[in-house]
Structure formats: structure tokens, C-alpha cells
Length: 224
Image (cartoon, rainbow, N blue to C red; front, side, top):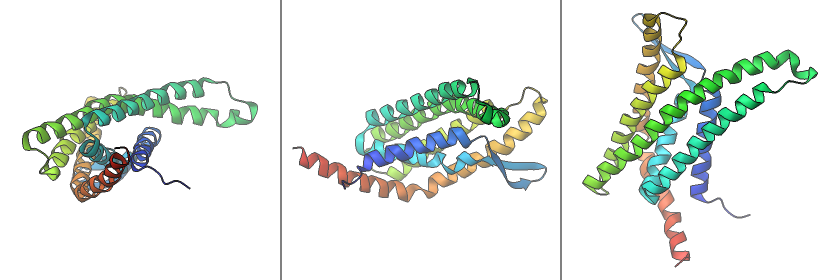
């Protein structure tokens, strides 16, 4: 049995993180309370930092053009997911599925809004992540990987958090003040946790780059 190409594996994990976040990211869970403010997070918080980590590892080894191509492919996945969700929920169900169809439609219609919000936030944050990462590398060279990784991740994760939660969870049926309170209860902990996870993942960026570079080096030698 042939081994799995490391880059292919990273891209597969990247796609998994995107799809799982889109389909399941509507669920929020309670973290803790600060005064009267309930701090919550989306379950997607467990996957988002991994997306940016993979971006940084691939950019460091293969360059910005390859990462931009992967990001654009990720955006296409989200668009296709939205289109297919609209198609699947619009099909008339069989008699056997009729009883559960309303729940099916409700759940996946929520995922459509999540996907649209994610599409816009994802576009802004992913390209911003690569832009900041490369700007720092152009200025400082290939040293200080930890700096460009965390600087690009923290900036892009902050943008992603604000844009995504505002579009995904703002309710037109509720007063503005109530919306702001709820959104802050999501944005603050989510942003802080994602940025903290980015810092904690820094050693894994170094390990990931070393791991991926080894196979890339072997591949280039075999094709000389």
C-alpha cells in the first residue's frame, strides 16, 4: 500500500475543517460568565486555528501562490455547499422522510446562513493571513517564523471572528442592545481563545514545516 502524500493529507484535513465548521458551527456553548455577560463560543472554535496553522505551514514550504490556490479551492467548497444545501432542502421528501423533513430543512437552512457568513469572513481573513505572513517574511526574511505566524494569525482571526459572528448571529427580530450583548459574549471569548490557541500552536507550526519540508525535499531530489 502506497503512503499518503503529506501535502495531500494536510489539504484533506483543511477541507474537513471547512466542511465541519460550516455544517456544525451554528451550535454555541457556554464558557463562563464575566459579571452579567455570558461568554459563549461556537463549536467551530476547535477547528478554525487548525485552518490557519495549515495555511502557515504550506506557505512556508510551498509559497504564497500555492496557499492562495488552496484558499480559493476552500471558497469554492463553501459555495458548492451552499448551492447543494439549497437544492437538497428544496427537494420534495419521500413519504418515509416526511415526518423529519421540517427538522432537516431547519437545521440545514441555519447552516446556509453560517456558510454565507463564513464565506465572507473566510475570504477576508484567509487572504489577510497570507498577506500579513508574507509581508513580515519579505521584511525580516525567513527568520522569526513564530512572529509572522502569530502576527498573521491574530490579525486574521480577529477579523474572521468579528465579521463571521456579526453576519451569522445578528437577529433582526431583537433590539440592537440585546444583539450587541450577545455578540460580544461570542466575539470576546472566541477571539481570545483562537488567538491563545494560535500562540500555543506555534511549536506545531515549526514541527509541521519540518515534517512537510522533508517530503518536499525528497520529492524534488527524486525529480531532478
